[in-house]
Length: 136
Image (cartoon, rainbow, N blue to C red; front, top):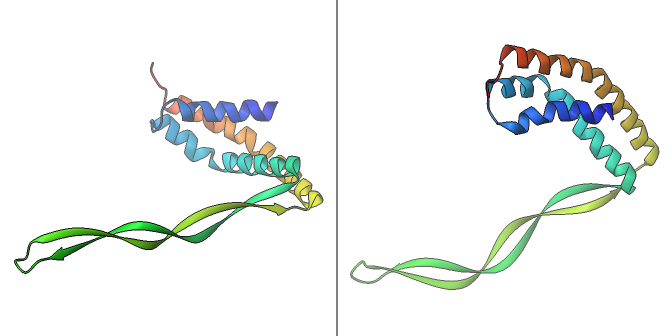
C-alpha cells in the first residue's frame, strides 16, 4: 500500500501539468525510482501470468497503390497509379517462458531497491515543491 501511495505522490504532479519547473525537477530527481517501479510492476505481472511478453520487428509485404509521374512529349506531368507490393515493419508481441524462481529473486531485489529509493524520492519531491512552488 505504501508503495502505491509513494508512486501516486510522484505520478500525480507529473500528470497534472507537463513541463513546469517543479515537474521537471521532480522528473529529473525521481527517474531511477520510477524506472525501478516500472520494472517491478513488469516482473510482478510476469509472475502473475506465468510468462513474459517480448516484442520483435517483422517485415511483411502487402499490396498497395503506387504512383508515378510520367511526362508527355510537351513536358506536362501526368500522375498514374498502379498496383505494387510494399514492405512494412510490424511489431509482434509473443510469450516467453519464465523461471518463476529467478523472477521471484528479481522481484525481491527490485522491491528492496525501490524501498531504498523511496525515501530519497519523497525528499526530492518535497525539495522540488519547496524550490518551485506552483500558484493556482
